[in-house]
Image (cartoon, rainbow, N blue to C red):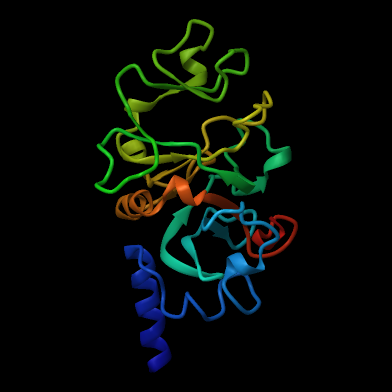
Length: 241
């Protein structure tokens, strides 16, 4: 009976965006002892990390957890149920645009944006979404995989996202630095951590609205937060990144 109560409590806390019992010091998801970041090959060098973990590459749901490095120990600051691409996850280095897959790997978080104002306490640079705000996904454009305002003439509207039209998803979002610094044409554009829509994503990672707000007030650029996306095991396991 005690086990049943614990399981129910843990599930409820995940939904609300709180850290499950034992997350700071007990076994973490992905197998093996110790918190998940401590078992990863790289965490980006900062003192904050978001992990987005799915069970398998064909999964469309999983868990996002945000972690703090305190006195040399990784401690879970919060956790929430997550959604991934409608076609699951795939290795970021070989991903192809338009496949509805979420790229695995370790990425920085260049900036945040949103249709709604940033939550009080947000330290990450935050761009307000306006009617003229677009994310260019046109492989033939010089603005490929970039925020544009307004949309440039060489970036086709049919190959881009008019951000203001995604009222639920882009209420708040963090840009995931996948294919961002030196964009490779055809690999993919516009990969974000954003608020849930109606179902699986087109390749982004999404969480409930309140969890996204909590992440924005938690993240601080001085602590170099990164996001690691992967699976529990196999070639795309989080521990490989």
